[in-house]
Image 1 (cartoon, rainbow, N blue to C red):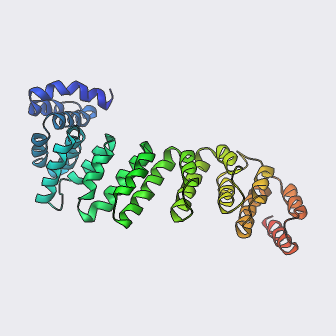
Image 2: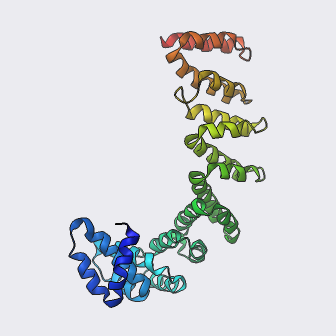
Image 3: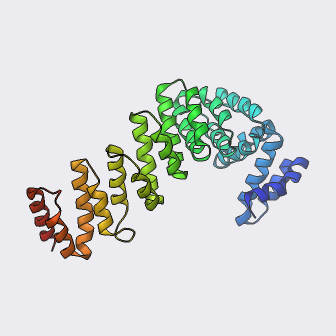
Length: 304
């Protein structure tokens, strides 16, 4: 039975008596007890956020934080009331011993209530704001990245906005690196564009190197195409591309240092399976200078 099915099961019990529902959950077998308890407390939070929070606050130390997470997971159905409750708790207990701040951030993000989470973050405790912002915008970037990017405009603090931007990019790259790459290409030149494009290509190279290869081939020559080609070389091997294809990628790299580093990576692998072909390539590659060729051949010879 899923967590949502458990929640639906206990909602009726909670409306009659939350305390009895919790006692019933505690009486169940080990494999079900904690999941049922969480579902009951969450359902209580949906129905009566203030009462459920008051109950969670008096639980034992080893249960209080989990119970608070459950309460707030349900309470965010009434977001403004829940915001008021948590703000009051933080005012009374700045150390947040019950963990209500991060629990609310997680609950709002899980519920897709990112604008409400941003409202909470903007006046949250300064010491926690960066961590909470990163957590919120990472989830936002995973699920609704375009909305998350637009929401960055509402963050006035430069450092916090940078934290949020990096979190959006990381979330977006995990779920849709191709979409992030397209967005990055439309950004103005600068550090943010480079970061977004680098993250996109790095994730894309792991998830779908063939798709990345097709896209990189559409880029004009330059730094971005070089980085894409080098990533494809670094993240693939003989199992998913031929040495000849890898060498095409190497030869398309303009940056001399990156080109030689990528060549060394391919040659090291290729030399293990076909040393004769490897040495033949090095001996006939017209783009290598004679000193480079001699150094590479010496290196290859020393491996055996």
